[in-house]
Amino acid sequence: MGLVEGRRTSRRQYFRVGTRLSIRHRRLAADEVDACCLELEAAERDPSVVDGPVGAHLARLEAKLDELLALVAEGQNTSVSKTSAQFERRAVEISGAGLRMETPNPPPVGSAIWLEFRLPGSARLLNAVGIVQRRLAAATPGANPEVAVAFRAIRDADRQAIVYFALESERSRLRREHGPRIDG
Image (cartoon, rainbow, N blue to C red; front, top):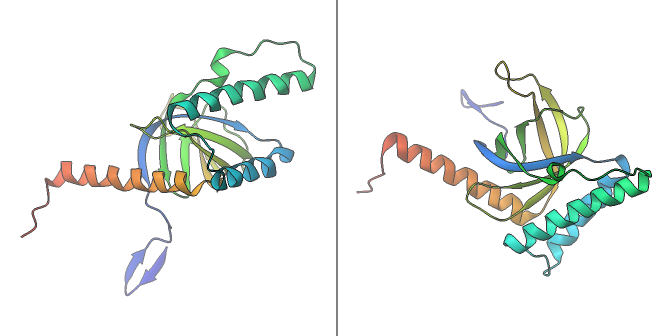
């Protein structure tokens, strides 16, 4: 934190908010990180990227195909579990810079992970490559440990959607606590 005229100021670039998201993640191998970042950059430039329910369905299909290809490449004769491609509802704290989430198997600090999630009230699938910044113990007994993840690559439109969601969530919270604002 910085100090300005006797006040503490935050050096955070984005506002953060706590919520529950439909989210899934997987650890990226070292040779996948740059390719995933480039994929997000290409999606930013490519107008043929499909958002909404169709885009979400295509993303799920792509994830299942990626998992099958990985199993074939490893020479495993294993069926793909249906739950591995499913989203889970998780408590998170999210901002335009990254997120903190509960996870039963936290990846090591410094690991790159592929994130796919939907903001509450939206069918749009957001994607990001994140780097695990720190691991945190479970906040309460019986809860999962947490990881703090900084976005390394994310589409501008996805970051803007997160920022908008965070600001609208805070605005709603303030209205609940203080009532509607009356301008005179």
